Structure formats: structure tokens, C-alpha cells
Length: 207
Image (tube, rainbow, N blue to C red; front, top):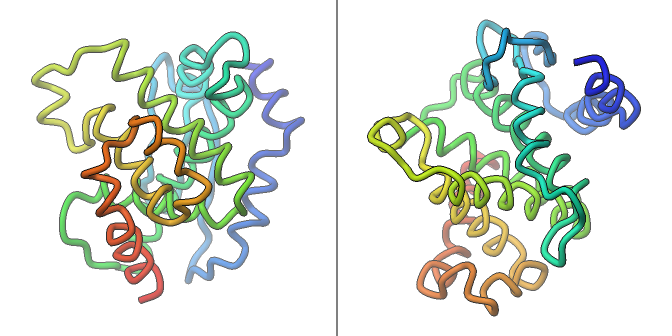
């Protein structure tokens, strides 16, 4: 994993996220780390620590296009999902440390909070990171037909996470993400309700 470690270190991804998350005031320290997981493609939060497996990052890199496409660059298809998974696991930590009550599945709430925070990076970064995240879910959905395990999992299916990500993005900034509706990637019947979905997350975030 040394080459991957060096690439992430050169980008200073965790250092930048630490600066961004510095405004998050928690009653105790939250450690965010990357490490090898003996072949397991995974990421999780437990006991005050967020762990991202290098195998998970390698999986992201494998699903990213080998060259830039009109829809997404290879860089965005890697960096976007990486930021998303870190923020997703940080969301689990916030729910736990601050004892935030949840209705519905915690994995869905963590996805919503991660997408919401990515929208706060500014229009250009939000466009790049959220498009990269959506690309990962779409590629995963296209590459693997859902099984009984997927439907019974605590996470939504890859296709559901794809549309949920786009909905929060469009609901929070319809101008920046309008092309997804115009190109009928995000169906209009869902897009019409995305503003309400975003405002629901905004309300929960503020409370």
C-alpha cells in the first residue's frame, strides 16, 4: 500500500479534512486513520476511531475511469468517493459521540450528512466531489447485479445510493446540478422532491 499512502500524503487529503472539520466541536478526540485490512474492502467507525482500509481506496481506484470522460475526470472519481467515505464514517462518529437520535437507517443518515457537507465546500468542489461519488455508485451498480445480501444489507443498494446522492446535490444546488435532470439521469419525479429532502437534512444539521 506504500504507493497509495504516498499519493494520499502528497495530496494532504487527511490534513485538509482535519482543517475543514476543525469547526466540529466534539467532547472527545476523534481519530481518523487509514490502514491495511488484510484484503477486506471496508471502512467503519468504532470506539472513537474512523478507519478507512487501503483496500477500499484501491477499490475506488479500480472503478474510476482509466482516462478522463465528459462526465467525470479520473481524479474526481477517486477523490470524491474518498472524501465521501471519510465524511460518511465521521457522520457515524458524530451520531455516536453527540448521541443524535435517528429515525430510519443510520447508513442512510450518514450518506445524507456526508453529501450535505460536501455541498458546503463551494460550487466547484461540490460539483467535482459529488459527481465523483455518484460515478462510483453508478459503476458499482452497473458492475454487480444486486443479490439478496444487498437487499438485506444495512446500506442501500449502489443504485439507491447513486440517486440519493444526486438528489441531495440537486436539492441543495439545483443550478450546479441541473444537467443531471436535463439529461434525465435523475428522474424528474424524484428531482421535484429533492429540494424538500435537502431542507430536511439542513434542518436536522442545524438542530
